[in-house]
Image (cartoon, rainbow, N blue to C red; front, side):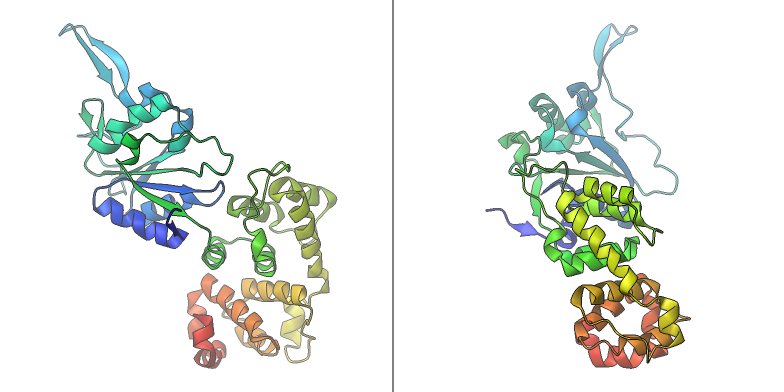
Amino acid sequence: MAFEVSLAQAKEMVTDCLFAKLVPMIVGSPGFGNSAIVQDVAKELNLKVIDERLATSDPTDMRGFPNVNLETGRSGYLPMDTFPLEGDPIPEGYDGWLLFLDELNSADKDVQKAAYKLIYDRMVNQTPLHERCVIVAAGNLDTDNAIVEELSTALQSRMIHMEVRLNNDEWLDWSSRAGIDFRVRSYVRHKPDNLFAFNPDHDDKTFACPRTWEFASRLIQNKDKLSFTDKALLAGTVGEGIGREFAGFCEIMHDLPTIDQILANPEGTPVPTEPSVQWMCSGMIGANMNDDNASGLMKFVCRMQDKEFQVFTLRDAIRRNEDLMEHQALQSWIVDNATELF
């Protein structure tokens, strides 16, 4: 049984590996967000990402192409320009590179063997990688019906391995900052098991996972009402069953008071009592609260009978705009509920 870690923990572990000049290997189910970890680490370390998909690579991509030097009468290998090599100029605005060897365990055995020297010796054939280039590898679990080749023990021992599991709270935290549509976030809170509804033996064309929920968000953004084609697209994005259910959940919007209605009468506008409608209302307010309307919206939020919905509303709002924590309308609530909020 592998030692599983969350995305946040994996990010910290990857950073530790890079500072120790080691190569981490991140393994997780399809659509989990392994590449997001790499992008976040690269951003924090100010590194330019080079995304090399080994599943579609050839051994010569790792070693270089045979090259004949007519002056010396000898042959060698000419490295691909994919890799930053000793003496290359550091890209402007960056402190170096992060070479991301994605889909490593989906690569052919010959490609894996060709990667030995790159990963362990940091060399493309006989040419050293640039000292400012770090390497991160990733792949899928062999239990998920992804195209996976078993790693040789020689390659296994060249890397530090970590298996990633999904944490809903972490994803919700990220999704608020990333601008994921509040209807998606509200639905995931309402049906947490459907954030990642993956069965390796499923018969549907696709499935719900962080990647496909991000796609769904992009499809419905700025659409107050979903058309038949929107619903069909959702079914083709997160799977038919969950797509239909989510589309139905979005219809709840018609039962909600608008932000303008709440602000016009924050102490008299009816507060929803049905759980699914409360989740949607919480997400809507959290997505729309700002410095100008916080005073009015907080009067409404404090009338929500279940404190859990108050907490989720304020979490969403503060994740989007941390300055709201200093707003007078939120201060007394935060003092009384700091433990639940944080």
